[in-house]
Amino acid sequence: MNWQIRPATPADAEGILRVYAPYITDTVITFETEVPTVEAFSERVAAIQKEYPYFVCEQDGKILGYAYASRHKERAAYRYSADVSIYVAMDAHHKGIGRALYTRLFEELRRYPLYTAFACITLPNEPSVSLHRAFGFQEAGVFHKDGYKDGRWLDVIWMEKPLREYDTPPESSL
Image 1 (cartoon, rainbow, N blue to C red):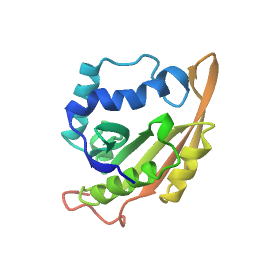
Image 2 (cartoon, rainbow, N blue to C red):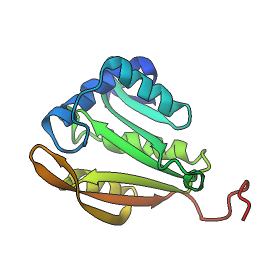
Image 3 (cartoon, helix red, strand yellow):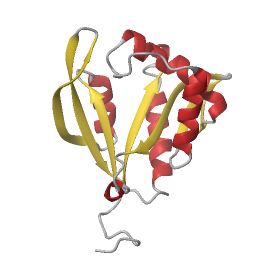
Image 4 (tube, one colour):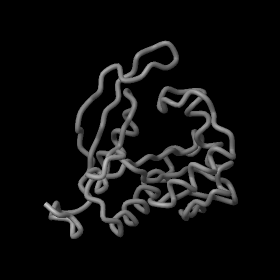
């Protein structure tokens, strides 16, 4: 293991995009259909980091994977939930990178006033479903034919993971 997990910066956008682009162009795992520009992706990273953690796995200056949390929904009552995403370079699978990234991400999420993490996974994708189960995620539901890419309709599974005990948040007024 010669790699390290560290917070991402907008300057990492090009390396992160090198990991992500093959998922856009060669798979149905993401429903994104066009590779964003480095500038647009850098703006995404910066926008997410204003509120949530974003980590990369790097080895010898090369990004091998990344994981981050983001806003689950826009309405105020959703503010205690977050979505999580993870991508590992196609040639870096089965090296423990996904596990290391999620371990670091969930350690950091304990510092946030979040109660539930959600993951949305295109089916079939047993490696991703298995990784999420290993981190305590359970199925919340399947959305059938939720997206259309590469000439076919695709299902997605939503998985959920509690991040803390469901007490009353301090600033909540019921």
